Image (cartoon, rainbow, N blue to C red):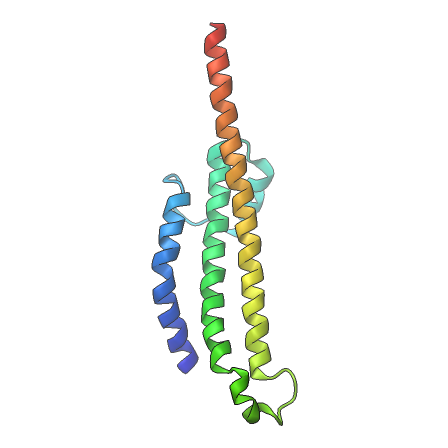
Length: 143
């Protein structure tokens, strides 16, 4: 019960920031969130900047989700800090603190991976957009 209250409090604090980051990167054409299967097929067939931006938006959403989960797990990890080690002295490994630490590190790793993917597709979208502008200007010069 206490863990769920901490999770709700953390998410209520983290979601406004995640929404601001998401709104800056998500395009208006993306009305419903993409599923992992849709993103995978879009990654294989993407060829314009709007599609790359959709993929990047998905990874930005994933990053925000994993960072919120990591923040909640960090609160739990800190609650189970080694200061309470005497309580856990006779427990077998993994201790509750260890489990919370592993989950925290796992969520951070997933968030970092999603951020890397989002950055990659943001760069692809920017490069494709710049390339399209250069093609348009050179084709107008030839006319």
